[in-house]
Length: 422
Image 1: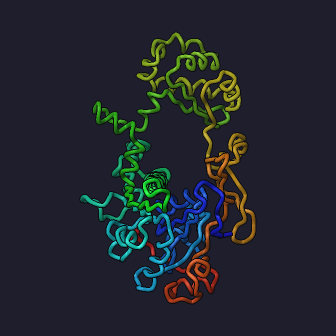
Image 2: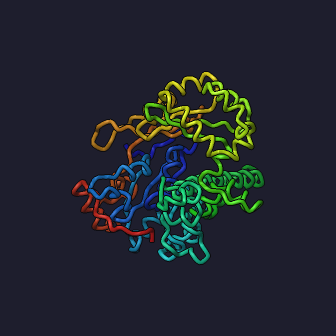
Image 3: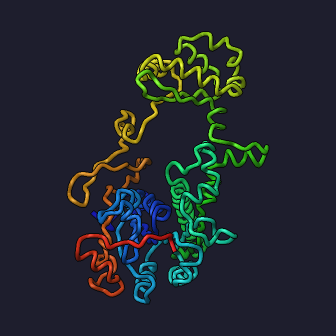
């Protein structure tokens, strides 16, 4: 289902044009779609490279994750016809999000100034790797590079590992930052509308939109605010174990090989309770662990002691005792474990939708709940050019591009040329 009638949700009635590739731009728009916005994804005739992330002709699960709830059209923006079609879409949009390299949108004729000349109320959002200016601004920006430059890996990867790990931190964080910035800009526009109406005796509002810039590296620094602020204030350089040490967080393993975590934070009651749970009073009298500061200082030694104790009994034994003692803890889940966790199941964080083949498809549900506005029904990510007719009109129109027409005729996405956002 790819309908533009998405009135449910706090963003019902808001139209978003997304010119996104890979993750950051598509994720920002997906978050807005989850809130009820009508998101129209504009792709080149060959499609977003993420569609073929798995290397096959089928839609990749990665693309599906970042593009659910959207409509999809194809335009060749390097042609006069394609550009004209985009500008026509922008006339009726509230928001346009793009994650091209700096200057590309302006060079192709749809920069912020050109768009707002057509639609003064439009909010434009540019997501870049390193911002609009500076020595790195024009470089190709992928998450691995940004996470390295932005010190993210230094916070999660031990120095001896020396390899990129984890999810696409900077892509996801910049997408979240962009969606937040867009919401703030919409609010500011509506506030200007209200002031205009009040000053005009209740006439029509003329609130103007604005341009919003988000960088992947800046979003990482926002996320690393604790480590960054600590360094700027004290000169102390945080590493992967800096926060767990101060937070008194430990990973333990039961006799069945299943892992769990314990977090004691600052309150002394959690340490006292843990000693009772472990039935090892000698820990309390050990001078290495007698105070919180001593436990922080001797973090590695306490880690060894806890692991030696917990490996005597299976994980569930410890989870039950920790729960009874009200000590912060939890199983160390894999992604496969996550969706069998009874708490996750009880929160409705997985929903079943209809996939493109008609079969049921389980997907992560939005984590937010609006008790009055509700939210739209979740729907699968769109096929390439699925909404050309409904959104652009004129089936067979030259502005769609030859690759897209061939793909639509065959029922499969067109081949993708790998590359960075231009």
